Image (cartoon, rainbow, N blue to C red; front, side, top):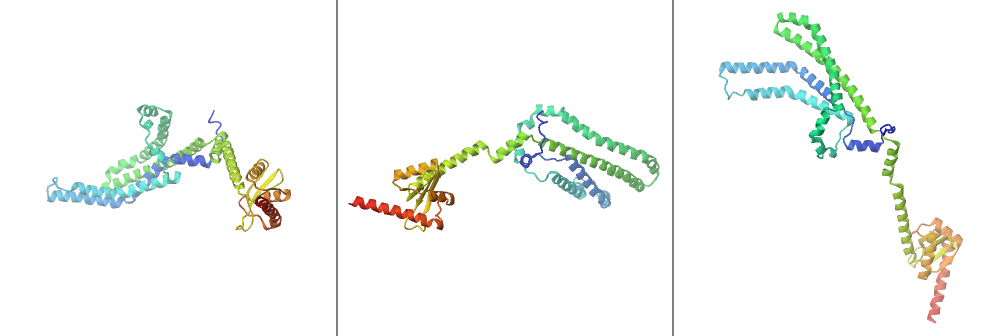
Length: 354
């Protein structure tokens, strides 16, 4: 029932995660069939030249046996090894190259470090024994029998057709008989290869569909993935609250160095700082409602003048960010307030001196 709920296509994040774990749609049969075809075709293409080299090798061995007695010091093994290497390196290179190319075409190059980690379950004898008698193993055996039956059918048909000519070929020369046998074997090979190739393509398509089915997700899984990628809403809300609290704390501390606080009088409060070396007054703190009340309380505790000017307070709150200087259009209004504050401070100083 859980599988029935997975009706949505896999997201890019799900596909990337599966790829990091080494999960891709890849058919071993397709890679193996392509490698076998490449290797055999290269082997057949270089057949005449290799046949000549083998003939020269046997002639050399026979000549050496006639001229001298074969002994343990006769380098037969190095000669044969050199000949075998020259005969097989091209087909093997072609087979490995085509296998790698087909494998990369199916799923690309994958590096999954998780697969390199030791897994005790993989070497568990009980688990391996269970896999040997599992449904998956039966299906794999059945899959191997289908193309095998097709190849046997093709081979029997060809040999049945060629059996009379093969019987008459016993009276032909060895060259003619070997050429005829080679033609029959090659026909069996290329027709059987077509069967294997077609079956490998079908196997890849089936594996691709199974892979896509395994990657499918339910709507709940997609929502959960989006939460994990974008962040849990509750966590994000808590982070925003902490950030707001931190900003408020910083502004409350910055309000202590203000020269004057302009208020609405209750809804807005903007703390301005101005010193002789400053080009223009700067907003060091601003707030609305509760924060405005806290800024006014700090101003009273620190002895900072609080001036009620609703239009100016609203304009400063909406147009000037904390840490920025006021715009030129507000110079006159702010200058008037600062002049009043400086006159009031001067009068207070004069009273203290008297």
